[in-house]
Length: 196
Image (cartoon, rainbow, N blue to C red; front, side, top):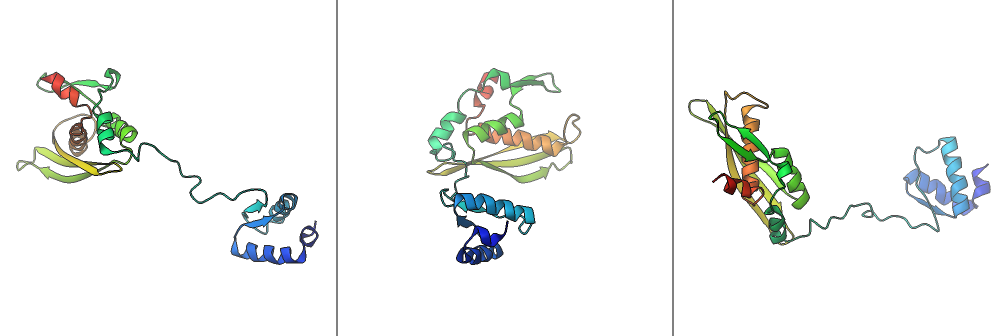
């Protein structure tokens, strides 16, 4: 099927110009379907957006995913973070001195932060080794953002360089500092009170 039989001479000129500029072409529905088949069958264009006149072109922001969580005030975010964490998410570990303690793994803390404060950010502020080189301390900052303010908390975590187990000493110290910084917002803070 020839292109000129589908369109009038004026439409043909505007189509040629649109194809060169890669901009959308607005034409009738039946013509759009036939023209689209012709364009793809002749492989003249890799991908051409054709919009029928009875369709509405999507706005650039139409596919953005809205989130009600982002536009909340800091007080509401803090209220959510201060809720008691379910027991099923809490882990227990035994220290080298035989003392056992309850804690939240860093990945669970991360998910809770994503849920209740989706605009949070975190950064390592410093990594310091002790003078004898046996310990590493990481300072970590967590910032939460509300529609009325932003708030940050910092904390430190220390790990022995000789400690065996999963992850290197810096990773362990960072995870500890991250959890503690989040606890300063109230996340899992009840675990510290239970240990007293």
